[in-house]
Image 1: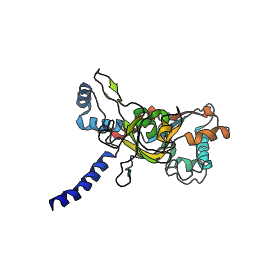
Image 2: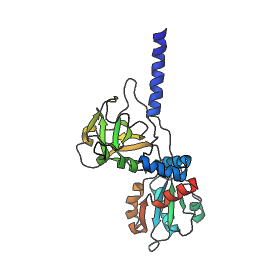
Image 3: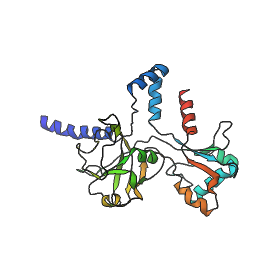
Image 4: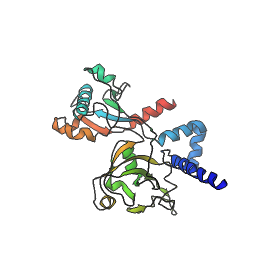
Length: 293
């Protein structure tokens, strides 16, 4: 009776451990003296909220319009038209976009693309995303989840809507073929003996799905999504560039402006009309100011 009870409890414990592992719950690590200084300045609770916010990406992307070449309204309309032309009128990378009834008011009321509401920033557009989302990393019975480990810089881009490109891949499970579904985790730099920081993973490392894998414990709670491999494991580490994993499920859903980049030239939508298609200090500053003010 005892053996059967322990056997039934074992899968439950394993499932709970997997549920805790395959999440995105990063923690910001401060130098002790810096942490004490800010905790004293802001208070423990408020500084804890600030640290948590800094460990997650903004849910906004920012477009700064070059008003010497075009108006903010014109860029907003062209951007929405490009979304429609690419068959993404129902959403960008899974994000819902409100129905357009034509005219400026329809765009301003849009749930995804809208103007910056602050005076003096009339040339700024915000594109809103969503997250964090809880994902389910399913595996086959008696098989570990196939996985790809990426660098921190690669992960930051993926969290902003990019795909996983080959230079950012550090390690991959064995027997991964083109079209396989893989989980994507992040290798964070760890303190080195010389006082610096290092990733500690040799590019091309093979993952076996065991606790002896590289950074097994360190990657707990650092899974940013899952996707479909664009090539086999051998191909990923043989060619110098290209897409390694096409993301299908993301912890943070934000639009990647790559879907609009090619049609920009096809419609004579000059590159100079948009001087920045990336997250900026403005979006993060206002997000944190509103949240903690």
